[in-house]
Image (tube, rainbow, N blue to C red; front, top):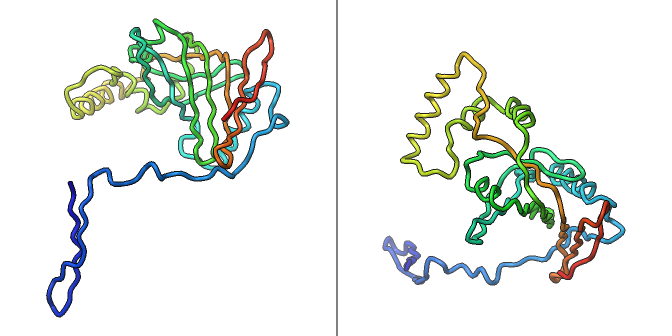
Length: 237
């Protein structure tokens, strides 16, 4: 419980003229809403290949200077059926797939070793757009991983060695101390690729494009793989 006292000076004396009691969750989030009016998505706007439309939208997100335009939520499921989400960065894509990199001992990697199904989500809120990707993840070859690893900033390479992702650690200071130790260790040499660090190629089975519209009558189109091509359908908002 929070009590607010608004105090003013009157005749050189303090005067309590207003008092309100509120809870810590007094902001009425149920009333928070806005209309989406920036654009629309018609069937005539669709491309034959979904990745052509994705590339167009990604370029527009980058041109609009959206923070972390390549960030995507990656959703995996554990053996109990419990879903987990986290943000990762899209690092490459082609007409059939998307790539990201991670620690191969991480929670997500453990999940994917048991169930390769994955969902990716790009939340381009400032453009009133979302893209959803459904697919199957497979581990990248060491050759592909090494090529990307060698392009990373040196400190990021060292951090790949430091962070045993998703494992328990004693403190932040222990993490930073290990980083400094390894930085000194590799000071004269190239940073090698850790055996526990790699990447995934997500082969796309379906993609949904969402464009916000007025009165919650949003535009949604889904591409589903059908033979060697794609079937597109409009979805209800």
